Length: 294
Image (cartoon, rainbow, N blue to C red; front, side, top):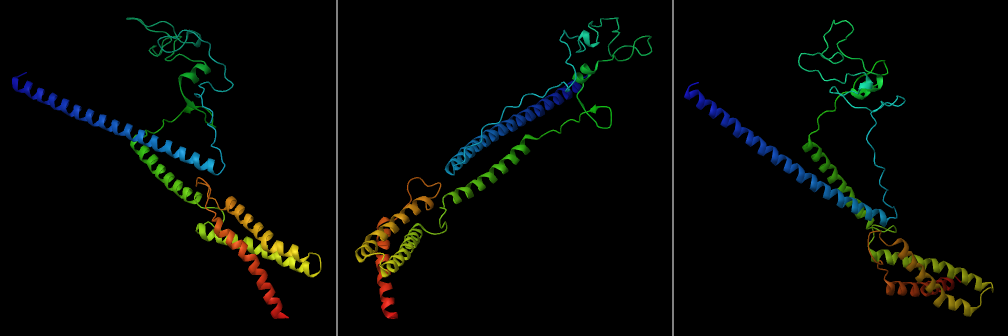
């Protein structure tokens, strides 16, 4: 070999080394990015689980218990006897399974191994294995048509593609979680109304229901079932107080959002004013209508 050929070979080896180093550095960077992406995705999923746990507890749904850990699949088919334990040979089979326990040395041929010469009397090319050992040695998939065939290998999975798919699913879960939080911040009663408008509507409705009871008391007073003092007490104090407490309880039960901590605003002075004015005003309006009709 001349010096020029040696120098060219050295340059070629140096170039191969640099290419290998660049490939190794790129692979290391790719693995580092994959690990960083997996850690970030794990943190996101943990935060999502905690938020979903809070949402479930807010609506009274406990988190599901963790499922049982799945053990490794059994390699022995159901119904087949387990192979007896024993020392393994160089071919990976025990002596009781039909394999030879001796290692072929120089100048010798194993009578039961794969190197047996075909055509030799009494010796086949491959040693026959029992059914149990064959099932342990070769993974097979049962075929309904008859004999077993080797199971197909799983396709290679790209970690970057799987991480990107998991990231998109996490983004979609975040969007659904935000929608659930928006819905959880709305009360059951009149969810699209403002708190003030909801309180006015509830107290006014309770006052209207008290006005209906007031009309029933007025009719009962007209036939002599209720005296004037009892009628005045119910109109001025009893029915307004019942309407006020009914509106207070309704706002506390159905006007409270699920994800809002603390008591919702109930506007007590406004409710007191509405209830204690609506019933007497309704009675005065009834008297005016009654006199106008007479």
